[in-house]
Image (cartoon, rainbow, N blue to C red; front, side, top):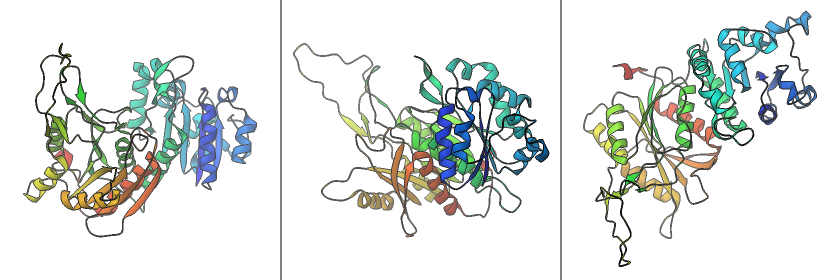
Length: 417
């Protein structure tokens, strides 16, 4: 695949060298097009050494090859990483003051931009409007991560990790409409849940879990890249919801239940990636529970929460317009009586969904981590499928299996009905 990697003038440019390495090690031809400002952070020699290709920044270089048009026309993928606030504004306005600007105006392939900037720049109304405009034109603009920025600043605006950018780029290319192959999930409506639920004990405290929401977001991003319309129902998460999805925020299991039952009917698929609490306090205290003077401990009685996955399957069996493909997640620990996969197989049979994504969880496993290992089990008896790596990569693997379950017949955008 012929890739153009655009690099603009931000401190995160050094991480793009890692992204370039991922691309070249996968066997792709990469032409790096840095802006003049980007060379203040990482020099031309570095880009040429890592890509094995000549690096140019000016429109008037290699004029005999009509380079400023050729690069964009021949590219099968354009990635701009990092994309500064200035570069987003120039792209939105259609400006071409340098070679990268010309590439963006001539490219007819998928374009992905990975922003990196200070929080105030990312949230500024001008940047928000520019991002909205670019997305409306078909450009995939990732939301930046939240975390440590330059200096002592923290917040949204951090450059996404190279593994995440590369996984999203691959999914974008795989799903890009072509004359002979439409996007894999074009016309499909998918509901994805993610994050943990919080069950209130009193106005201050709650029962919760360690879920970060990263895997659910990765699944939603992969579905969006495959052409689906995604309604994303998010609980407590440490990451931002996926850009381009319709978002519904919830907190408790009951709120998640109500949102799923309201929005899943009519969709083609429901992916229950949320970490749903099995129990909640039976009584809610209107005031903060305080320590007793006699040193006794409060007794907290728990009750079961709604089994959303099972209810969705049961509602479908009862003739309600629930999705024909329902995917559950099984976060298991295993014990002396059964392994993680044995528990997963039993859960698949008990829930009645079409596919169950099983993984082993623990204090230092899966929850909050950037990588994971899963096994996908199927109700129709086909062989299990394993996937491992960055959660974005696993999200692509899950959506690949979802695409196979849905098949190619009867594509309807039924969320509009």
